[in-house]
Image 1: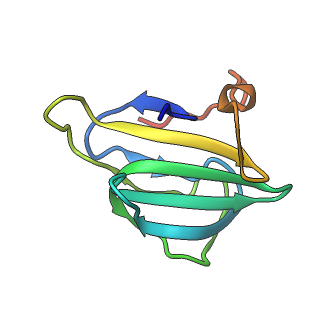
Image 2: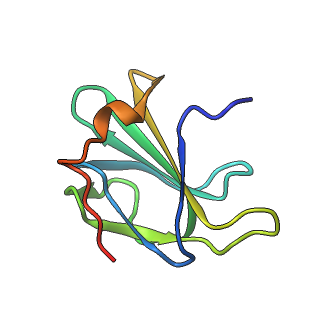
Length: 109
């Protein structure tokens, strides 16, 4: 199965924030993906985030863009720490690169 999202290399323990306002519809372990979050946004969109060591939100919680949601996991044996980001609309994958532009990417270090 091929990935339908992006993998972003990061540092171990990096803080992850909500990409857009929304509500947590799932927070917890999922199959062999470890801890994941699914955030529902207006317009039938959902963001799937994976690669967490800790999740600091609960199902049902409302978020605003930029609000911390957890931290990234440690390096595994065959790869460095990374965040998986998948955008879906009406249950179908959407290319998340269309949503990123130099004007709306926030970087905090």
